[in-house]
Amino acid sequence: MTDADYTATEAMVVAAARELDDGDSVLVGVGVPNLACNLAKRTHAPDLQMVYESGTIDSNPSKLPLSIGDPVLASGALRVVPMFDGFTTYLQAGRIDVGFLGGAQIDRHGNINSTVIGEYDDPVVRLPGSGGACDIASNAHRTIIITPHEERRLPAEVDFVTSPGYVGGREGRAELGLRGGPSAIITDKAVLRFDDDGVAYVETLHPDVSADEVRAATGWEVEISDESARTAPPTPDEVATIRDELDPQGVYTGTD
Image 1 (spheres, rainbow, N blue to C red):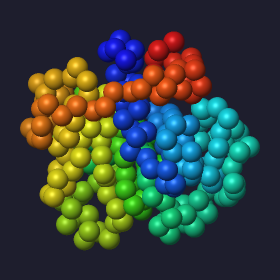
Image 2 (image 1 turned 90 degrees about the vertical axis):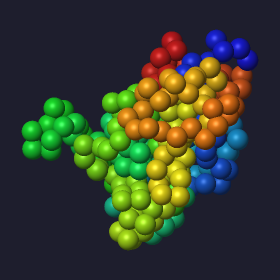
Image 3 (image 1 turned 135 degrees about the horizontal axis):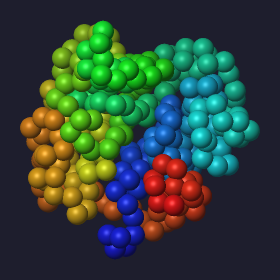
């Protein structure tokens, strides 16, 4: 493929999808995480077990669901349970391998803010809040975060911790009794992992993205482990699956 054969958003979606292993159980978020999970199931992870907050277990949608309440999730699911059971019997009981999340802000410790921008009592913007995100971040065995790579979205510290990452470092998370933790932040510029202290660093840069671009778009002095390390680009089949099957109108990728 040439560089013009995929967009930055498609590169982000593909990189996120590749984080999922065949047979994983994944609690799927809305928006771009939803697209990434459905791409994984249609490519390298056909036995991916997708669980949605609405209570559909092992969903197998015939098309990309527009929300967690889309009826297409129920028609091909193994089970449909009350939302309460989805969170207690599956998530809080430790039966979910991966939680897929996004947010307005993600900081260097993988904490997610979807509550307010600015001071809580007098915010610049009030956001929708946690939904099930805090439970997912606290109970999944690993969390994958996906976000556009912008300084305002990747501050050194979030304005409000809606969903915990490595709060106070890895030891701080363990002291809180939380399961798992974030394993990666996938952006449209890079793939970030977490070091022994629970601080995010850049593992790979996406094709044609420079280290300086990433540093300028990150709210902390982010470490880049190897400036020559590159994320494998999307394959023609992956791009075709996104454009022809999953998002033909470009709702999430903007490619229409």
